[in-house]
Amino acid sequence: MPIVQKTKKRGKLTLPSTPFNCRIKLYLIMGAALRVLWNGYDYLVLYLGLFWLGLLCLAWTLIALIIYPLLSERRGRVLGRHVIMIAFRLYLASLSASRRFSFDLEGLDVLRDEPSLILAPNHPSLLDAVMVISRLPNVACVLKADLMNNIFLGAGSRLARYIRNEPVRGMVRLATHDFDYGSHLLLFPEGTRTISSPVNPFKGSIGLIARQAQVPVQTILIETDTRYLSKGWPLFRKPPMPIHYRVRLGRRFDPPQHTQRFMTELENYFAHELVPGSAFYPAHSLQNSLLQQADRTQELISRSPP
Image 1 (tube, rainbow, N blue to C red):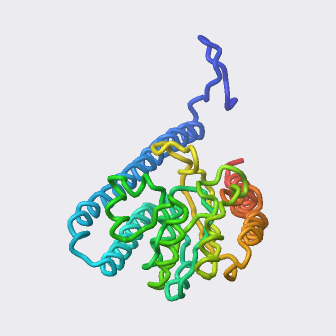
Image 2: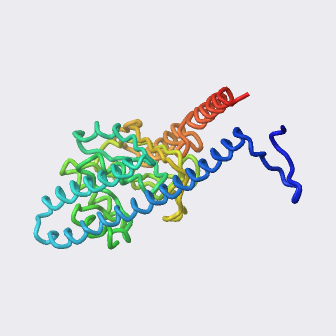
Image 3: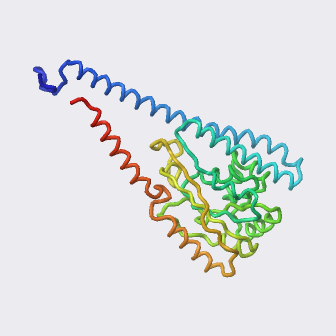
């Protein structure tokens, strides 16, 4: 009996009702149902994660508003930065528990006891600052001015003595002063999320601060296999999942003597270390994925009935 035959009425190709073909139909139905369930689970993880982060930030905002005038600048700085670190770590742990996100951030832990540094990561997504801050207890972050007044981030940022990026002279002065407390300064050299591969043209502010404060610059390389929350990505748009992030330490630059020369060297370093596209597709990941897919295909072929 042929495996595939035409129906008399409509001339469509169908599978005759043999036990083997019935099993194929069942597997197809189960596969489709499983894909629907996984897709629904992905949306649940994504939206609950965003809701959870918003809830954490809003809850801390209300507390920070109350205690801000009651604490000294030093105590507010210490408490604010520790709470933000814990909140971000809790958020990332929740995403990791879903098995739809993975974060390889252990490389940052060696910086915890380091003296003052400027942390200079590339910037593929909105999660970059969350990942870095979640591992380090004394990070001053340079924020856009409008974020300092944001309902979710403003009060907590002000308590932690985060630094506005405008005006530039004020930013340099406040950042230099913050190093007196042994802090790490998180500053993205690109100034905004990456839109051109491998990195955007760098802003000169990181060179100004490093030269003024005579503080080393520690580069951080962030790699991911997704464009989720990259520049222009809608907040509620679901990406292909699971999602993986890896953060590793790069070269540490000595305090510069010539700002422009330093910025050129720093940008060239990132451009060579992150080959085109590698911020979104880590080296060899696509090749390994294709090899694994070929192995699975061969395995399925070998298991299929004759």
